[in-house]
Amino acid sequence: MSELLPAIETETAPNPGCAVIWMHGLGADGSDFAPVVPELGLPASPGVRFIFPHAPAVPVTCNGGYVMPAWYDIYSLDESGRRADETGIRASCEAIRALIARENARGIPCSRIVLAGFSQGGAIAYTAGLTHPEPLAGIVALSSYIPAPDSLAAEATAANAATPVFAAHGTQDDVVPLRLGIAARDFVRQHPVTWQTYPMGHAVCLEEIAAIGTWLTARFTQAGQA
Image (cartoon, rainbow, N blue to C red; front, side):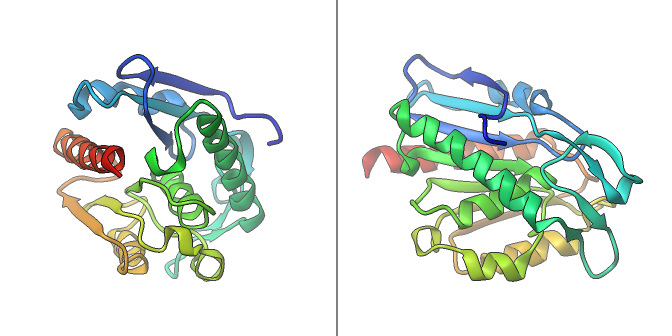
């Protein structure tokens, strides 16, 4: 992952002053969440650049070694949690840091960048966000979990020790059980956390997207006044 990840980009206004880097789930690609941007109901100002990167295709052990877009390999889905490839997690976090650095070079500071993700992408949003060396504007984790809590606890940075988090989960999720979402919420309990549940499976809903839009508007408004 030495080169920048390919990505879909969309801007809500010319010369955006804020950015959201939004990671898709296992087996999907960057196009999965690009259509939600108009549904967020964001104001005309500040302008926001959305970056939807495509994960590389790798063999995924828990899916019989099938090669698919993935942020890291998942070894098992047992009841105690998900055994994940920590080397792959770190590589994906570095790839996201490269996208953050490009936004910095384009004039958007870390304080106006949100990392977002769904499912496995949310796991990377949590991990990359909480270990980033500079304060970010926020972290959005949807239907997600902490993939390597012990390592994350050891590597979390003081810079993002109080970064606001929006986390949401479906109460009927049979892919990432609600208990894993709750465990992730509890992991970041010292942060300002907005936690929402919705009567759905492993998915997103319009009510959830609207809530994310309200949260993003507040975060970027506050970042613009800082």
